[in-house]
Length: 224
Image (cartoon, rainbow, N blue to C red):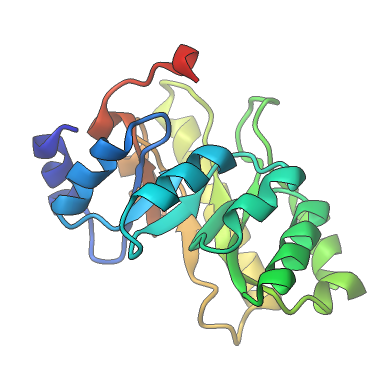
């Protein structure tokens, strides 16, 4: 890992913003190096890889699942995951609630919204989310806790567009807070911003940035 860049990022962050070090496709030794510097929040994209690292690494690591979660893989992460950032459908949330109930846990989750122009990205539209909030099955859930929202901006050099998309996610957060979570103190997180755009995300109200390549270097996706 690049310790100098890591320290620079930490020093630049407001007290209200937490760094999630994205360690996907990186060996456990890289996580250990960051852990030795005091980092405790790590993000992973694949359930099996997260399970393997959890077994190898210190128990006080807070594991964040940030990738697209397949329902048949939920059981691998529910016993220990700290926060699932990527709840992108009602069906997925129902499955997380079901598996969490089996483990006797209440699992913290963020609702992922589609704010980018790319169709390949996942996430709720606001009307879909509001429909879920009103659904009796959602209101009966006792083993998930919605703590905020997550989104990914378009991969573009147009900073104005990135500002607009992150601003939209912040607006979604405010709408949900005012209409559904006004009395829930734990609904406070806006997970947005990655290596290439996290300064803009912070300007638009992010409370969590997900930074990987800037800290750990480029990834070899062909090795997966």
